[in-house]
Length: 191
Image 1: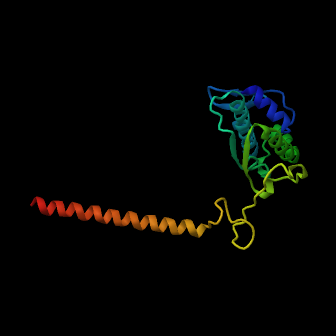
Image 2 (image 1 turned 180 degrees about the horizontal axis):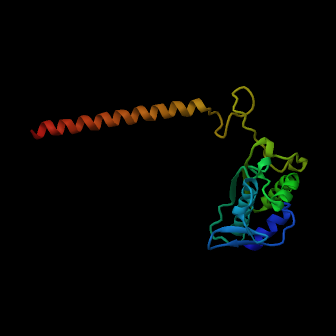
Image 3 (image 1 turned 90 degrees about the horizontal axis):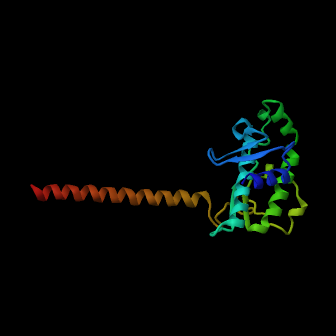
């Protein structure tokens, strides 16, 4: 796991990378002998994404039952937060933010040979990558019924789920009323 993590961090542009270890005891990553929790939010998110990709690669190479895909949600979430700078090491990492974004997505392209990679990310985190063209399907969720695709479930909007929740609550209320009525009838019969 540590070997794969080191390879993925290196290919995805982690600056001044010297060591990458994964502790099975704590199920956590240590980068340059620093525990992941000492990093800022964006770099923790980035490291978690790299750990996920390292595990994905192990499953492809060794697992009897390889799922053949991985889903990563906002892998670079928080990298754009200027409040992240807390010490010299994090400040140095901050200078490499743009390089990290580009290199991370290039790494995803390379790892796609192992199976399907599904990434959900915000537009602000997506670097301009002409090399993505023809290698992936980019679907933008617009939350608009007039432009593009509304959301993950094609043809469904937020209103559809609110209506469904209303129906489920109505059914649950009816079942509760029926159960209460049945208990009352039992009490009357027992008298």
